[in-house]
Length: 289
Image (cartoon, rainbow, N blue to C red; front, side, top):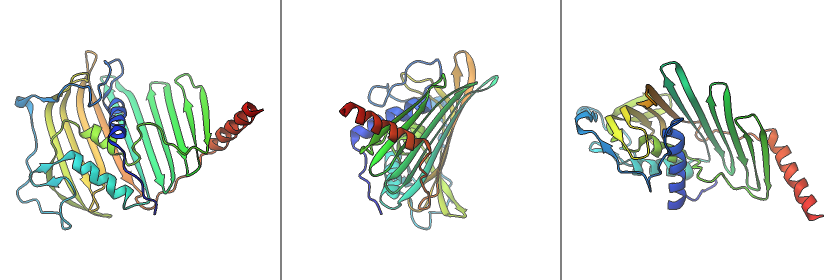
């Protein structure tokens, strides 16, 4: 089993900034602030609707996951436990994220990202669709090389190969931990019980806020969050919904995160990787002539 070193504080800040930008920014809105430069969280007290844990909710048979108790959820501890459960306890997994912005006339924008890990191999894909326009990127790596493919809004395709450099994109958290943080930032999740699934018992947590304000970000209203955590501490699913204004029109944002195929995922080598690495080798040979 391959052991991975956890991200540094600087890496986490970059990852969270990237994740916040992807999750919370809306087309046409002002720039998105990262945790280091954004204003403080404000919840309108008269609108707060934090759920209360059911008194009869059973304690999970295997105990509470890290960060979860009857008194509430410590989000950072929960996410650290999630990261550790994957990087120290599994050798393969897949994390997917979708974000859909809907306005009065229908879908305004849809984004989808996925990171798949198998040992020292990984594949990250991202797509953003606005009407008929599409932006996409992919990054593949193994122990000895990496390659990227990007498609611009105009449809231009760019390949980049890095023989001998297996680096990952800056700010990418392969466990999805940064996505989890960006989704749950400023909410106050509570333990609400357990549920049996084909893969075992999961712990249920939920949060509800009437309104959340943060400088540099659109106000989020009627915020609803729900998540499931398995017995190892892996956040298996998270769903976030909230209302926003798209300019002067009302809109909604739905975010869904799923962790699948823990221990069984395989990472394919996309067909474009060979061309990207071959082009890089040819350019390197030409430069050395």
